[in-house]
Image (cartoon, rainbow, N blue to C red):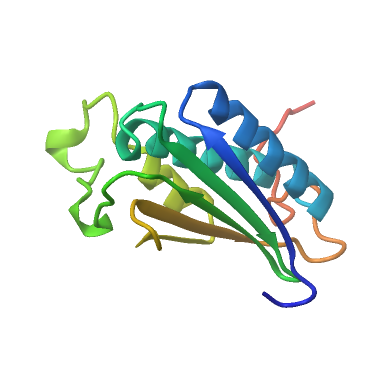
Length: 160
């Protein structure tokens, strides 16, 4: 790890409450790093989806298994790792949520959202088993829009 990298990690219980705890930790880091409201929302939603996947699919909701969350803040990006203690999976085997047969499915959009909201996204085998989600978001440039939207507001225009 580079000397100018800040590292935080947390071991979470396989329980629903861990989703909010993980999101809150990552949001605080994102806000402190200078991300605007829109990017904080994207990061928070990505962390929620990653931890939900670890809880439900990876650890199969088994309370004896843990979820490992790590955040690295480098000079140019925020990197988030979510590791479960399951059997792992291959990203190529995840069904496409936009395929016609999956459009009405009530689940299966978490990886799609994480890919859309983060600048980089991958799933790798964990060093001791399980699956490790690795996703990152580039830090905003100094003086950029506080909304994290490149200066383009996502709010609808209100005419006079």
